[in-house]
Image: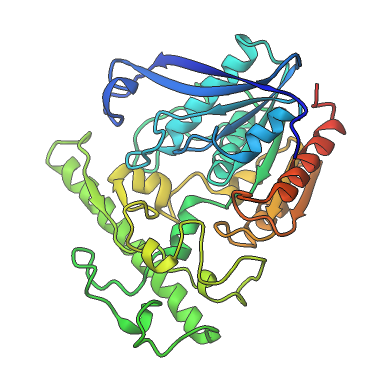
Length: 391
């Protein structure tokens, strides 16, 4: 895809007061009485705009992804905003990330002077964008899942004017529920496993294509392991509170978190993905890799991000409270987001104006896919143009 505009990259920094007495972030970023945030704004040369597209992921920085750059090259103003937890989700509290996103939206309107803001929820940023918009439209949250106070109503969150939900999943907790390895018998010894629940053990008599009864048992055991982990987390928090340490924290490791039958059996909720692969590489290796899903966490972060029963960043529940125009884009060969997730959020959304599109053949990151990338940009521009959100 040819660039219509040259792009100027502008580093951005925000700082606002931190009221929490718990130090979650290493170094200067959040330990000096203030939260410091960084971002990159992409500005097409010679193109003014009253509209800003904001891309934000709870734990990643998105300025290296193809889509934000391509959107800017098409003539749109784009911000890739980072949270206080950039590139380290170990202590991440979703409710705090909502405050960070709120600071960026406020800055966009009050300092940069944009009239309209479009939230672009990419991948893990989808549930974040939905949680933010739901709370900005009608705030309800006064505490984190661990019970720590966080008054989002008092934060004065500024609602966005529209949302794009792209290559995004329902929630990080739902992904973990679908990916955690149920074969682990001892959280402190991941080599003790049930071979009949180990997708990668050649002794397992259940091989793709997986029988329906085996899948039902497998999914139930996944959920049981996840909930047992959550029960341990709550027990540890209660133990520390009982001994007079209500603000104490603890880090821990959760082993083997990439056992997703969909990645091995292409029949399951099929799309154009290649079996035996995932966005993290070979699933067998990703299962124990240091960068695995939920590998490192603190107690409070687990409840906020990874507990299927406790997280408040659940895309379907949040979408049911969102009323602004919504564009949902499913990548037709997504090798990260399960195929049903985009449709689930689309159907749940309360928006009277909502549209869903599928980019056939597109992988999660559009890597080496200029045609699909151009199509995705075109879909977004057409949708934005029909709602007077291009200039």
